[in-house]
Image 1 (spheres, rainbow over the protein chains, first blue to last red):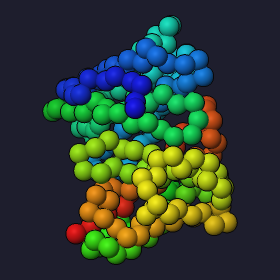
Image 2 (image 1 turned 90 degrees about the vertical axis):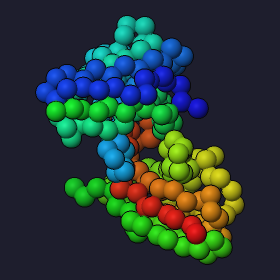
Image 3 (image 1 turned 180 degrees about the vertical axis):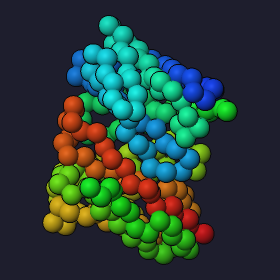
Image 4 (image 1 turned 60 degrees about the vertical axis):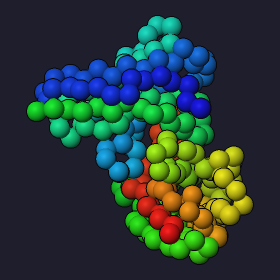
Length: 108
Length: 116
């Protein structure tokens, strides 16, 4: 079972920042926080990951709380193409355990 | 760099028949994973290869499923005989490393299997 909790759905206006929360209160010391997304019926797409420091890449930013019990994925300027299901996953190697994710709807 | 490819993209077979799915990982990726999503359910892990060896096959549902990765390159997943509940989308993923931080998995587009 997934060790993360995410809201089932969120809306965001196009051009605004999308902030997707994730709770992982039972995270282990060696587990990284990974974010993936699945656009429509395509294969999941890797977005970003982090251990304890905040991370940023060309797609998004990841903010991890100091106690590591929660994190937030930030899409700084959401576009219609960012409409997808976003998955927050804890990983220490090997398999990914997908939960239900957050269905983000970006609206014009 | 080519991504993960899967063949076929769609397969429709009758119950009791055999189907073989193929996955070509990203070149140089030793780690290859199979996942599937059946209707209305979450994406579930099936198994993990490191090169040609099965590292973890704890997610394989039963002995009707057989995965191989001869030579440590492409992989096949055979379902024999197929049952109605095997219908779903089968995803393959690959990664360069097994452990983080460099183990991000790259997924293929999936094979949609329909068993009638």
